[in-house]
Image 1 (tube, helix red, strand yellow):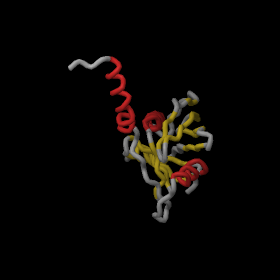
Image 2 (tube, helix red, strand yellow):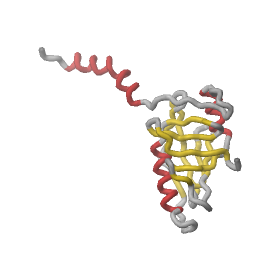
Image 3 (cartoon, rainbow, N blue to C red):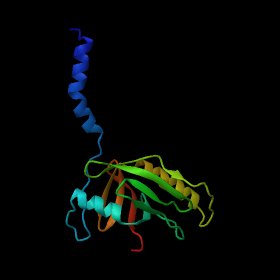
Length: 158
């Protein structure tokens, strides 16, 4: 049986919502430091009202002597310091816990102290661009990619 172009288009439209659902990141749960769950709105408020300091990229701790920071504005603006360079961009909120970062802009300075800080900054920016969701857990922030934590932050000064 041969399917005409109109029938093929209608079949594609019928399955588009199913296909789109398959490409969305799985929602993540956020919890306060006491272990109770935060609503999506409370988690977004915590995300956007707390200045964050990076602790880990994947399983790798931040280099001793370097400081990587991030702040989120309720308007979606993102800014901070990557360890050497200041950076800026935006993050779009998608659903309850999804995020999509714009390309990140940064100053173009070079740093050698501590050793490896430029490589760390590069890895940070790559992980940031890969993030597709977030969760607040035990008072900290985890940015996730495909359900796996890629960046872990604590409130700055904590």
